[in-house]
Amino acid sequence: MDYAEILHRCFRCGYCKLPAGYQDLNCPPYIRRRFESFAPGGRMWLLRAWLQNEIPAGKRLAEIMYSCAGCANCVENCVFPKFKSDLLNAFIAGREELVNNGEVPGTVQSYFKAITMYGNPYKMPEAERGDWAKDLGVEAYNGQEYLFYVGCPGSYDETGIRMARSVALLFKRLGVSFGVLGEKETCDGNEVRTMGEKGLFEALACKNIETFKQAGVEKIVTLSPHAYHAFKNFYPLLGGTFQVLHYPQLLTQYLGKLPEGGPVKATFHDPCYLGRHNKDYFTPRAVLQSLPGVDTVEMDRAKADSLCCGGGDGNFFTDVLGSGPESPARKRVREAYETGAQVLAVACPKCAKMLEDAVKDEELTAALRVTDLAEFILNR
Image (cartoon, helix red, strand yellow):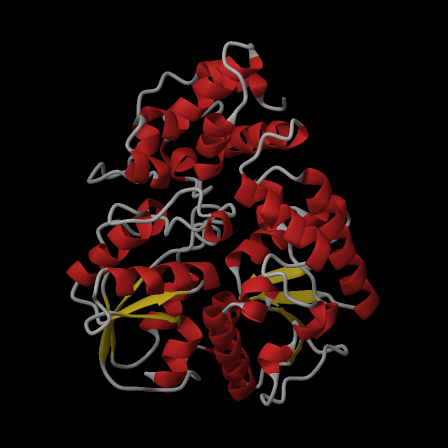
């Protein structure tokens, strides 16, 4: 297994479970389950024991490995600089071994099957992939400055569709030159990669790269930070080098030109794949703070200390991590509510859906509204 040589180095000191300020727990599966085996250190030791034939692969090991949301809090707070950057790589490599051995949870198998058969985890026809843009007057990509890559949630999920429409409408209002691929688009594969199906990820990536190159794409702006992460960091390894932006990064080029609105207090939830994975904590806040009348406040855990919603690395679809009052998403919306904010702003379709559901479960819909940045700008 790749990265096997670092597994024995973990001392299980526990800093990986905490934010830098030590004010609370910050590892989603440990928060939810409270067993050391679900913490990063526990996963390290279990992987080592499995590789040394001390324990068998089975349902419990697979559940533990796939409960990780890939939030990178462990990478941020591990005290061992010589191997901390490879912690998530080790967990992904462990999942690759589980995939190769056929030892993955049923929901994970179903996810891979749906991607293979339909090109998306919703099992929806690719011919309907562009339906989100009907009646908006959005053009097909034909050489505009930017390809707007919407991705699977933006194409098929109700919350994601609302978010994609808001971003497209805002781009049109600002005069951004962009087009979309519609039914020619396919899954970006980020979660396929992190869930251990390396071959399927490479097939998806190569298909997208070929499509982008044939269309003459040079610049891509993404709806999801997950797609942004894959395009920016992993597609170049397969020959797909493009200029990639996440949509708030593009909006920073239009500060001062964004629509005005009434006064409101808002807090921002950092998506893991924009924040900890790509170290961009600035651009969404720059957009919010540029809006007249918006009073921005921070949650106790923000930026590098942000608490993950729990939807990363496939958990949005597989729900291996689970729900309930101690789920990361519900803890996160309680934290947002405690700031006194009326709006919890997000910049990720998966975060938006997870946190919207959590607000309903916490019965906070009258006090706290979850909305993506573009929708907030258009409708405040």
